[in-house]
Image (cartoon, rainbow, N blue to C red; front, side, top):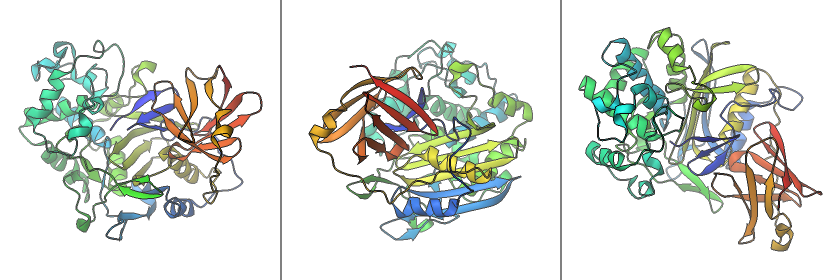
Amino acid sequence: MRHHIIAVVLLVGGLLVAPPAWVDDTGITTGDERFDLTAYLENLDRYQKAMTAVAIAEGGEIIYQSYNGMASIEGQLPLDADTKFRVGSITKTVAAVLVMQLVEQDKLQLDTPLSDFYPEVKNAELITIEQLLSHRSGIFSFTDDPEYMDYMTESKTREEMLAYLFSYDAKFKPGSQHEYSNSNYLLLGYILEDITDRPFSALVDERIVKPLGLTNTRFGGQIRPQDNEALSYVYGKGEWQPAPETDMSIPHAAGALVSTAADLTTFITALFQGHLVSMDSVQAMITMEGESAGGYGLGIMRYPFGDQVAYGHNGGIDGFRSHVSYLPGPDVSLAVISNAMNYGLNQILIAAGSYYFEQPFAVPDFTEKPIVLSSRALKKFKGRYGTDALPLEIKLWVENKQLMAQATGQGAFPLTPFADNRFKFEGAGLEIVFEEDAAFVLKQGGGEFLFRKID
């Protein structure tokens, strides 16, 4: 559920990953002809890079879908079109739609202060509903609290979650900047319930699911593989390992929905066709408040792909990663959901976009094997590196015979050698190639950046 945009990278749950999804900075991928997307997705599963559900819809009709991997590895239950995944923060777009519906019904205003509902939150009298929607409230995100990892798998009441939120100091003056915070949407979910006197789960069902005829979307609970619900996994010790299971009472409107790739395309298409809120409300949702908004409107993110612009949201919870977006020009929606990811989600999105637009795409060689380099060989790469292209530095060091990297403001991540001077972090689709003059080229998401050694 965490998304902190820093330069060209995102910090999601502690992982360095590619630029905002659908990004290809050059607008062109390399290769000679339209590639086989299905074979690519099958290979992601075969080589333990990702298990995926992918759907592309045009004019609201599914024109491509692919399902690869297992809903339950232990039970040998394969993914299919009806397998339900946790979709994490895509829930925020649904919650934002519900808020805009109440605004249109004059039951709530975008400039209503948070103090009308929860005056105990720091700066509540200065925080508006609109600032909650756009992550400009300054409220500390509860998922950044070190205690969060200790209680995330336990059931929590509304009162218990509010106690956490009331205890946090403000991070910045409301409206002065943008910073993604799950606390914003937890509060919005509670406010929706306060106004309507209905549970958030019922609001989703009554106002989104039933009107659109969605068959596999609902508020999540304990995962039941026997009901075709996917478990999630993380990669470790050379295989997929079961991921912890967040109790869904905790994320609530910030990330508690489950859905399918097909249902997500139906939802996002209906939203942008004006079937859930007015087109004026849609326009308000996709309006980004300057560069400091971080490419975030009211429950909506913006993603460039070549000369196209897509609108949607990413999600991440436990071992699940998800994305849904809509391109108004060609009237196309795309959904990718994964319950096991040892690769860059952004790379999969670029692949799917390249497939639809019939652009060439450089398919990775998943058969390539890593090599082993001695600590002595690795130590020559140690140091701090910088680039004129980006406002960040990357520090490299050796730890337990492993070359490690850490970018400014990011968590550390390992670099795996595939040649004497070439390393990868496949979890982010990132490659570093060292040159002879104390420099390296960082390749990620279609971009290449030259870093030179500072010290």
